[in-house]
Image (cartoon, rainbow, N blue to C red; front, side, top):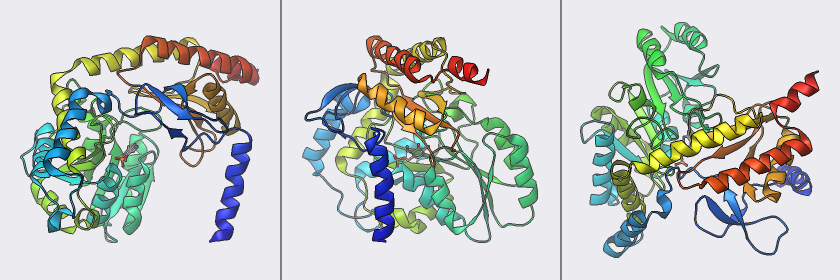
Length: 408
Ligand code: PMP
């Protein structure tokens, strides 16, 4: 155990020596479009343009959200004290479950809460899918979905590839008790969307169920921010919707929405719900207030989309390969992992905080700089980031222009 840890530690030191270990840096300010960060080897925190937060609408800093959390602490204290089944399910949890169900146009007993979005996926799939069953995953689903498949049979299909999905569905059709297809609404690395209507038709055709994790679609996609299912007008159609409160809803926790009989089963059989403490009063109050704001202050979504269009356009003008993004997640595809690490370092040097993503989060040849936009980014901040990208491109060549020169 210690030998393995040492080996891995050597690898981390190697990245650190190159200035490429830009992970787990300590931020000393709150989450936002500009953050104070302790950079490696520096004595004090520095202000950086933050392109790393999933707080898409900036609600973690909204005065009404903060006040709701403060009021909840005053009224209820700081913790819930137990898991939901044995004394930790309070009126505000009940209120949130009903609000989440209503958000997706379902009856009030159609939602269950978890303490993270991660467990919403892992626990739900683990509870429902056993060795007689098969879970069929798009290969780009989140790690939490993959963990959910540990107790069942799993097949994956090429990302968003309907022919490959049909092939797997056909081969599984008569061999398993339950067949469950799991996709994301918006994918967390490429920022692209699933063709949900076509996938739903296929799954129905082969007698499978459909589960969709729309962690990155809520508050971003759809006329009122209800995500990819709102866009496709399919809110009531899929078997299970999973999601998180850690992004647009400015807090922490997760949820699953589905038919009441399935949700009731999860409430009494899903281990991470049964045996793990419920969310704190402050967490839940912040979520409830954020859900209200999403309705009452649509200007944040408008502002987010202005930023998305502006930044996407700017990157494209620089010749960057931003793939197929259709959301607030914007990758700049670099390809080579070393170059990606170096790009991350050079961006940091210019005051721009991004996430270099390398294997195993993406395939070895698909390394990229990943960014998330917020409604509260200013044009000046986005311009500063674009300028920094231009300089990185000059220094180490990360645009399509440079890639095509290399090919020649
Ligand atoms: N699903 C997706 C697609 C995600 O990107 C994430 C986290 N980034 C999660 C689930 C997990 O959510 P949480 O952070 O609330 O655990």
